[in-house]
Length: 331
Image 1 (cartoon, rainbow, N blue to C red):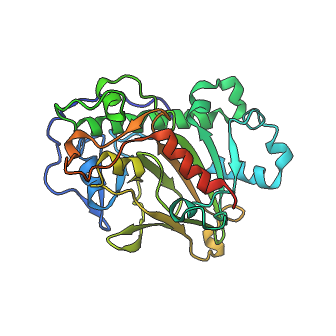
Image 2: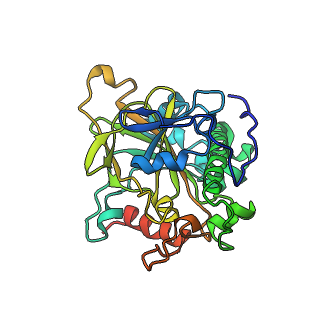
């Protein structure tokens, strides 16, 4: 797909957006060109309902192709030809994970809920395996690591710029996520994860919020639902867009002003026309933008109320471990 286009360096004080006035909407959700004319307005857009449709088809909005065809072929191999799947270098070295054991509802309901895995298959890649393991180690599946690298590059650049625009001249506390972004030193976003989910007929993903700062999702079909203004509603991503929504750490950074988006996947009963590949109804290509495990996350100075109600700081790794243990540990 070629190299990403050059982007200007992030700035603490962004120039006025080229697109002023009300943000464009699609079915009640902001649709913005965050790398282009709506630069500096992502946080504003997220504050409306917790989700944003991000234009990725414009010259300024660059994301690599999710290559859904390659993933569906790999899934078929993992499910139906396991010995062949195990021969991949990346699989033998555990650079690529494959499971269907996650129960995300437990991350909201707690460990009193019995473990009942969601009905979907997940491929997963850690940031360390994508960034620090070589092309030779990945072998024929190098395209997965390259996609992760390119997507992470584009999205973390955007996150840093957008958060810096909210800091103005107030220097954050040293060692926090905001402080690292302010100094442009020390934050590697190594907690980030790439997940590719395959949903069979009647597949599901139970209600939850995501652990990190933001989540970027590109999908082949509808089914994603969000809890907005007290009701569940479909998030139908328009052509040429990805959906981005706030996670737990974004809620913390904004001191609760932008809540983490509660979401789930509910699929309609498929027909022969809606199952294009061997029972695959839906694919989701997801990047979880998450800080380093030792990074402390706390509200940005601009969002502090100083009235005793400010959110407490957390070390990201501690937060991640608590939620992950609920999602995967059987009770």
